[in-house]
Amino acid sequence: MTWIITAERPDTPDATALRRDYYDEVASRYWNRAATEQEIDEGLTDDGTELLAPPTGAFFVGWYAGKPSGCAGLVLVDEELAELTRVFVRPEARGTGGGGLLLEAVEAAARAYGVRRIQLDTRNDLVEARGLYVKHGYREAPAHNAAQYAEHWYVKDLAPVETPAGH
Image (cartoon, rainbow, N blue to C red; front, side):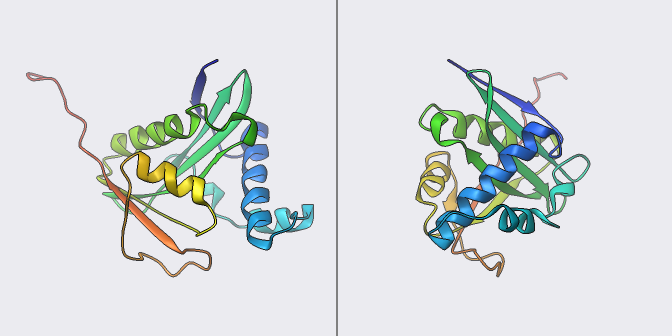
């Protein structure tokens, strides 16, 4: 089975379901109990989703075995900096390479926008995510925000897109 990564609006039914599952998992881990539907709804209210579409960003859905199985988002901070956000792979598709492919899609979109660096923040308990970022060239960095749940900060410098000689 292979992954197919597509750019989608973050408010499509599949993208919305993935964003809900993402928030359910991170909230449930944080609280050490299952998040309620109301808590998930509240967490997704005014969460900046509108920034995950051109011209301020991008959102990607990863399809595995024909099912929407992962997502990742990009938000432009300025002309040269973007934020990686909402990286998630459903448990049944983990370990199949989807996380790396989602990161590649986000990085390609960032380069297309002219971004030279991607940053992100995450928590101590999201060990799998932290491992994924390091595996794909992100390095720990000093705090770039004071977000409530931020405990680790990462950055990755992006090489510019090379154009063939003579073009």
